[in-house]
Image (cartoon, rainbow, N blue to C red):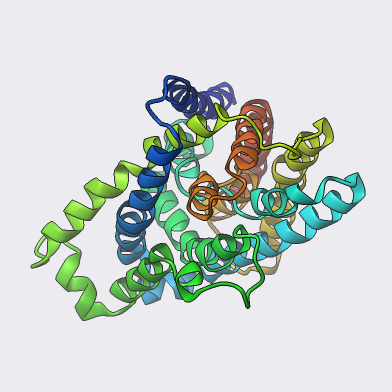
Length: 343
C-alpha cells in the first residue's frame, strides 16, 4: 500500500508544480490575458482534436464496446450523478449564484485521462494483486480509453455550452458543435469502421504518419492546459465574485468524497450482477474515474467563453491540492477492495 500512496501523492504534486509555473508566468506578464486566449484557441482547434482522434480511434473497436459497455455507461452515469449531487450541495450551502455553473461542472466532469493513465500504469506495475499479470498495464489503458468514448463527447456536448452561462436557445451552433466534439465523433468512426481503422492505425497503416503527428501535437496539451490554469490564478477575481470558504469545502466534498462513494457503489453493483468481465482491474478503473479531481479542460472552456476563468481556476486548484490526501486514501481503499475481489 505504501507504493500506491506514494504514486497518488507524486502524480497530483506533479500537476500542482506545473500549475505553479503557470502562476509565475502570469505574474511576470508572459501569460497575460490576450496570450491565454490565443493559446486556448490553439488547444480547442488543434491540440484537443488531435488527442481525441488518436485516443478514440485506437480503442473504439466494436468488440471493445460490446464487451466493456459498462465503462461507457459509467461515463454517462458519473456526469449525471455529478450534476445531481452538486445541485443538492450547492442549494444546501446557499452559495452565490455566480458560482453555480462552475461548481456543478467541476463536480460532473473529472480528469478522465491525464491523471488515471499514469496512476493506473503505476498501480498495475507495483500492486501485489497485479504483479503476476503481465497484461494489466495494457488492459488499464484500453479500459480508460473505452471510458472516454462517452466521457469526452459529453464533456464537450454538455460541459462546453453549459459553462457559457447562456440558455440553449441563445447559443450559436459553433458554441455547441465545437472542434473537440466533432473530433470525438471522427475518432469513434475511425475506431468502429474496420477499413477506416486500417488506413490510420497499425504498423502497416498507409496514413500512420498522420496519426503519429497528431499524437505528438496532442501530448503538448497537458502541460499547456495546466500552465493556463496557473496563470488564471494570478488574476484577481472580478468585483462581486467572491468565493466563500464553504464553496471550496462543498466542491471538494462533492468531487473527492461523494463521487468516489457513488463510483464504488456502481462498480460493486456491476461486479455482483455481472455487468462486466470478471477482471478486478475493470472495476478499479470505474472506481478511479469517479475519484479523480475535475477536468483541466474546464479552464480552457471558460477562457474561450471569456466567463468565469478566475473562479474556475480557484475551484480546480482547491480540488487538486485536496486530491493529494483524499485521492491517496480512496485509491488505497479501492485497491484493497479489488484485491479481495481477485481472490
